[in-house]
Image 1 (tube, rainbow, N blue to C red):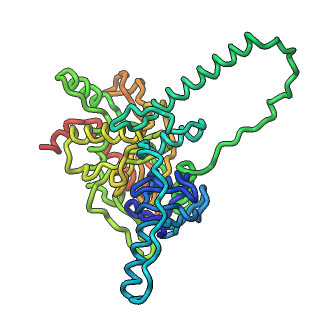
Image 2: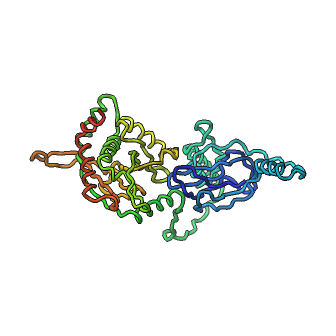
Image 3: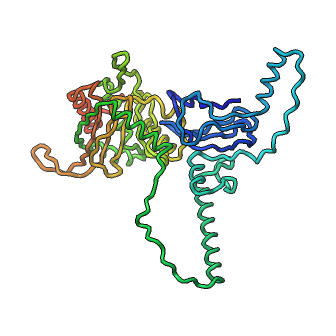
Amino acid sequence: MEVKLHDIGEGMTEGEILHYFVKAGESVQSDQPLVEIVTDKMTAELPSPGSGIIKEILVHPGTTVKVGTTLMLIEGIEDTKDNEGKMEAGEKHATQPAPLKQLAESKGDRILAAPYTRKIARENGISLKEVLGTGPAGRITDKDVYMFLHKKEERGNNSEIEESVFQPVQENTPQPAKHHLKKSIPYKGRRRQIAQKMAQSLYTIPHVTHFEEIDMTELLSLSKEIKSLGQSVSIPAFFVKAVSLALADYPVFNAKLDEENESIILENEYNIGIAADSKEGLIVPVILHANKKTIKEIDTEIKSLTKKAQENTLKINELAGGTFTLSNVGPLGSIGATPIINYPQTGLLAFHATKEKPAVIGGEIVIRSLMNISMSFDHRVADGATAVAFTNRFKELIEHPILLVLELV
């Protein structure tokens, strides 16, 4: 039986082999995790298509392979059944095959743990078989692994103390200087996938970045008023709604360039990606049909997707279909940047820190809450004037949030 890399999500063409959970000669059960792979969207485990024994592993960890590539071979019950069927159909006089040897006894129930949890364990030399899972159905969580590691270190420290009590004091021996030693960080997995995607975008799309300043005072005031009524709506929810409305007015930024057919494809859906920082690096969950949702619905979805990103539990369909991307780096203190477009999209809008600054309104100097935004766009698809018009529309909706409310009526 050949185990091949199959498409685990929309548009997947290749994946990098991170780690095998099995070795040649080991017995496996149906649906048991065999290998961990990473794509430009997510990390996932490929399960065994049946029961049997691992005959051979064909692809080394760290290798990037195309969909359809055979990763390993499994000998087992399923293979024998297939062979029996062929023999019955084409070899009537053949003798019955000898029964297979009894498979080795199972090593226990499948260990439930997310790919990132397994990664933590591997990097710290911990066998998950030794860790007690506290999650649903005994699932091992990141916290379980860290707790196990902490207890293991405590046991090690206690052993060192006991040894120091019974062992004679040794004279200090000069150690070689370590300041010349270099540290190496693995360039693989999600980091390499992100790098490849960024390089593809930067070297393919002629980027231009337009900057604008937005007065957030009225929107922040509205947010406080909503809180006083016992409700809570995050500021990014307003951003998503305003962007979806601005894209409807300037659809060239909700598009992608099809160079092969010499056309610009205007998307008929407004699916807004939210760049988020996860344990494994940058990830972009998507809010589908943002133009048809209320601000409250968008807020609920943002919070849910952000939580899943942090827990590494996003599904492939929650990462697919984006037509425009937002990046909110304001909470990190950023005041400006030239973001890289999420290829093959046409634009990306980044929000920076909101700061109280003096501004002139009606001839008077007043203190206002001002925020910088930066929009990178594909200059093959749109011109600077169109980008300015787009950000002006977004600015209008944010500075006068009553306009957002009217759009919902």
